[in-house]
Figure (cartoon, rainbow, N blue to C red):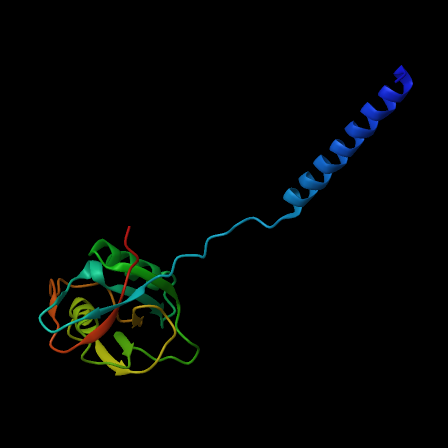
Length: 168
């Protein structure tokens, strides 16, 4: 075989390898990045009679039903300081009237709700209302000042489900 044929064969092989490399590189470059799902604010935890619910097992969301800027964020931070898991903070739905503090829930006897209510003070009320926030949903109004020293835990008296913060 003469030198010209060898050179042409070598160049042809190199061109094929180059094209394979470009094809693989382009496919890798345009492939979407793998992504992890964003962690949830809380996960359902089933409890049985005799279990105890303490702040680290409870997620709390706080919504501001007043004109005081930052009230929900400050209140949520106070709950976190007391060991509760953070949910959401934001403004209450338009038209919400709360003078002091309310917990919106469908289950007024839920031990997590009772634990959070003990930290809001004697003027807080538990209202049978639904809200999309994660965990125990608290609405704070213009007369609300700060959390109080409430119960350290509540006892579960019947099978129930609470919303607990992610672990780890």
